[in-house]
Image 1 (cartoon, rainbow, N blue to C red):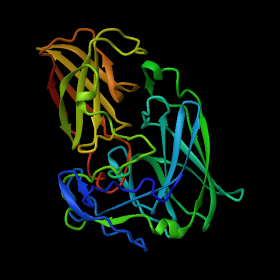
Image 2: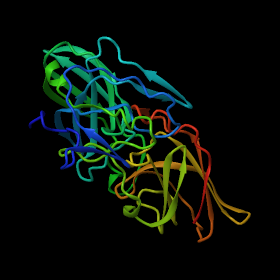
Image 3: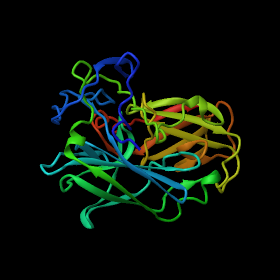
Length: 355
């Protein structure tokens, strides 16, 4: 595999990089990495970051029903989330790379966003780092699991990725999968020169404006985007917006296999605007009313389904056209964010749709 050319940012035939709703200049490379200052007066929404970067592929492996990939880029500042609070993680002096991993189902290519990943990094048999990776949102790098780590100079490294049992309801042909741990070992060569030649581009003209940069093209790994709304199964009820998150609601005539209750099924697919990345680790509840009568009132369960992908859903026995659905975000998405996402998905007022 040629890591030098894999996972570069997608460039249009004109040589220009596209943004969602705007254009930036040509991509550039850079021999010395300097993170630009954060944008001042950032909106409480998804916004164009100060810069974008490419990433290098370390390698891939397969185990049971999983496939996994290891990637790396420059060290990143990012934000973790604790309830309603965000905590900035600055780049430490000895951080060498931002190590990333993605895992996906080898049959459906679905990426489980709430997987639990831990990595052991070794060089010449000696331990370099052991870390639990943060689930993260990045506009151009997609949904991944990552953290900054300090390597021990140039050389050959082995990263062992441990994927814990998946703690999420699974339906359809995913019911019997992900119930036990899987581990992968991936070996790759690293040099600082290799890292310093990764694409780096400042977005001086558009930074801070509402919007998002496009996802980079990933030729050997599946997209982490959720299906467009017109590709979801069932009858599309509509969409709502809260905290700059988009909530797509669809109704199925019967519940997916693996759901205990029978009857119609309401599925809510929260995603980022522009790039359709999932918003996991959220507490979401719903209320269905028919006039003054309450038909359903309760939590929506995080679920992984081969057709609906990651969503929040519930069975409701007596749905009728004209019923109203109120959605309430009880806890916002507890997912780490790269620059451009750290201001969004916190203040999320209730939403209402008509079925």
